[in-house]
Figure (cartoon, rainbow, N blue to C red):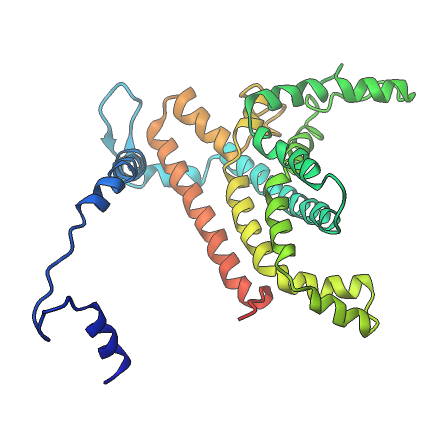
Length: 313
């Protein structure tokens, strides 16, 4: 008898003959437990997504009924200079902040992985900004720190720096302060890196030390390849999260995306169109464009992963 036949005979109830149709199990309890999630999925996620897809082909201002205009909203994007600027700001934010955040998270994880007294305390302290970084309170605090008379300029004044710039009011430095806030929230990827480092067998490092490999060689030849699936996981998550950043730019710029649209993130521009100008049809089209951009980057990451992610299987 084949293995499949053996398994089928084990699953068959006692007394049931071969070929007799099995009675379907009662899954009512399972569906009952899944009901809250299914209701949320259809009412909060799929339903609004389908409504947004329909509105993206309409002219809708929340007062009058939606008017079908076809692809006009998407054609309108091509000549929207503020949209192009928001894409430039968002891409700059993603391409600069995500690598810096992951590099800092990996560096701190490597330090903590060496073992130290009070590791749980330091791990909690470093993780805390990830919980608070996207909150309104921290964004307000950031605005006070980097304001014209904020903490940074007061410290620079004590150091003898004359007339330091207003970091948030200057178009050349405003985006950098928000990038710095994002990098500061490195705790979440750090915890994942630390868990990945703990899974690398120590025998590899011991064998490399016997062969005379230095610290950099062990890092580049052992740590990075074996940690590459974790790096890839963090990279995908952080890119998706960075594209969706909103609260920091909204609070730091006062909701305007200023100065001179230097902090006009894509999500902030979408918000202004939808809830500031009540141009819901165009805002829905912008939302679907953002979905396409994030999906494209995710697909590119998965394709590129074939060339640098190493799975030890």
